[in-house]
Each structure stands twice: as C-alpha cells, then as structure tokens.
Length: 108
Image (cartoon, rainbow, N blue to C red; front, side):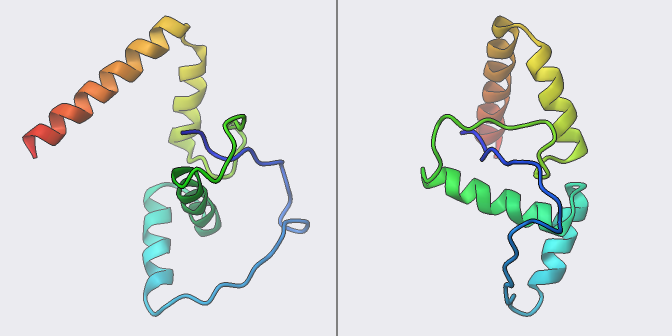
C-alpha cells in the first residue's frame, strides 16, 4: 500500500476545489491535523489518498516522496531512516511491527 506520488506544487498553481462540510467536521479535521502535525489541507489530501489506495484506484508504480505534503514531520523522519536500512533490516522491522500489531489486537 503506497501513497500517491505528487509533483511539488505551490498553492498558487495547485488545483482548487471547494467542499461544503457538515457542521462540526471542520473542527474535527483541524483537531486531527494538529495531532498529526499537518495542515488541514495535507490531512484531507492524505485521507483521500489513503481511501483511493484502499480501493485500488492508484497504480502500483507510485512511490512516496520525502517532500510530500501528506507526510508529517515524524512520518518524514521515519521514512528517511527506513530507507537507510538494508533490505534485510527493513523486512525485519516490518515483521516486528506486524507482530506487535497482532499482539495488540489479541490483547484488545
């Protein structure tokens, strides 16, 4: 599951689309974005992108760029450090995370 590759853009040249939100949703998005250290715009883009990925609407040849606006500062650092690991280390880390997630689900 890999996020959509995006060209670097400026807010002046980016495609714009007005969305009408139900009462209270703007505040909820603001809270979540703040918790993820993102702008509201980046939070909305990240969530839309994730939804499209889950539906299989994006091609497999897309890669996440470190300068992608969807990444929080923490995500950017993790991705950068992950890419510095050897293939064997990456595989081991993913297996460890998957194992921890399974254990957490069993405890719940």
